[in-house]
Image (cartoon, rainbow, N blue to C red; front, side):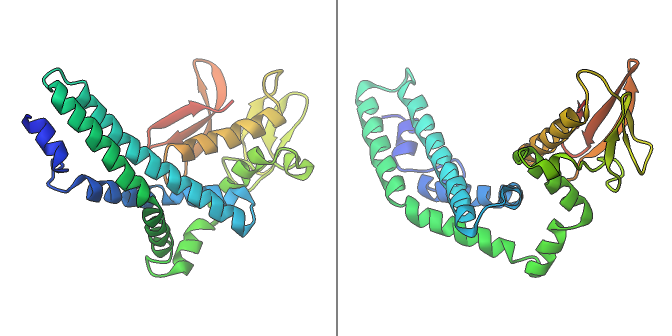
Length: 246
């Protein structure tokens, strides 16, 4: 039958943990890793409590499905191995189908455990008050507002007020030549491809893209002239982000 097939049939991974246990641990690990990004998604969603629970459940279901797919892909790779005989192919296929049925049957229990881990971790680290303070400092409120603007562009009030990404205190204004901050020296040339509305959208997109990378640190913004082109840049040392916003 071969060592590779034998390992799969006895459900043993390289680290000695059976595949089912590894599957569960991978799901639980990803809950912890994705917690911050999911919290931001909830915070900017402006949804009712029931809708937020649906967002959480959907995110956890995606994790379970993705981890299950990894196992299926791994077994399919073995099925395509030229050293595996036809009889072994049949055994592997039956094993894959059986394993899939076991995992899918227990998925509800795994999802419940993932929810428990999510909420337990949220209230840990010296209590919920510490977590809330970490979320709601001044710069995080600014960041959340920008992402919210990108998701709620139909709100006239939000479209008319854009905070400066550099000083985070002033409001961005525009005249016929420039986009500028009313409290710091931030200034960009205005043109057909750059105006206040476009800048608002690009700032929100830049923040959202940075969050999607899974980086937990706050990015920085600056106006720089590179190759005689003056532009607004987003940078983050943690994830090596250096991109033009506008």
